[in-house]
Image 1 (cartoon, rainbow, N blue to C red):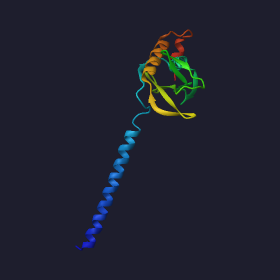
Image 2 (image 1 turned 90 degrees about the vertical axis):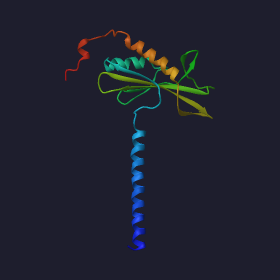
Image 3 (image 1 turned 90 degrees about the horizontal axis):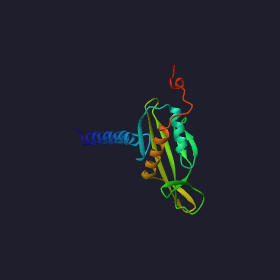
Image 4 (image 1 turned 180 degrees about the vertical axis):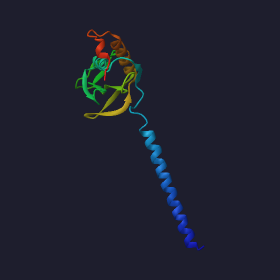
Length: 168
């Protein structure tokens, strides 16, 4: 074999190995990057055997500073902005606060039992505007989890057993 042919084979082998490493990195990176629908730690309540409408009503009732937005067909709720003062949420108003928070509730699962995740996102002031960061406040999320569980345990006044079953 000539030196030229050996050199050409080595280049092809090196190129093949580069492509293998590239695809392996791409597959592993995408698997790690999309492994979870939500982010951060937050609080999680599992095995909720209540109707979806009851869960949605309870979420809306405990949102600090009211509901700002509803996403994903009523499965994600964003609260208004608030600050944490004296162990409870207070509605945020335009002012000198260095940071503000909002709660993000997720209702997961396509049927019973449902899972609810609660995340409290902290935004810090950067000059004249607030910057969303991946900081979360687990203490406030735990407070909201307790309030949500208490709200969910209340008996509905307009209970109708027929409404809880889906015939079709």
